[in-house]
Length: 137
Image 1 (spheres, rainbow, N blue to C red):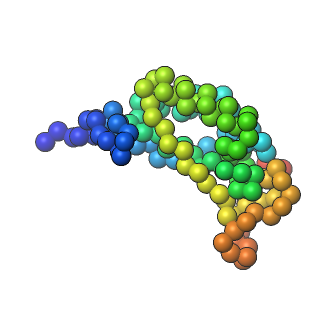
Image 2 (image 1 turned 90 degrees about the vertical axis):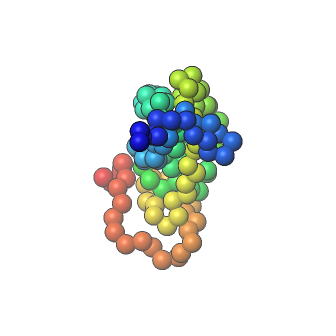
């Protein structure tokens, strides 16, 4: 039997042109600290518009959820505008996107945050190990 991977499918109310789902991959290409998506992100997602569905990289819903270097947000006017441009470029090529909303929880570094407050997490116990930041390396 022929593979069905390139045949149309339905995901709830969304019609997919094929069954190829692009999994979320953190690319660390957003503007440092502001989390504004960049032109290379627009290129990256629009180049993959042929997938049946693109799931974006983890995207913070607020600065409280920020903690990794150069990750995008969806909570300021500039971020929303940049994501709107990205989704328009993907849609113009017939693509579909879902956004993965992500909060860092207890895995964060203060040098990767635009605000000084500590992250809210489900545990008061700090995670073991080191974390990369643009400032400290």
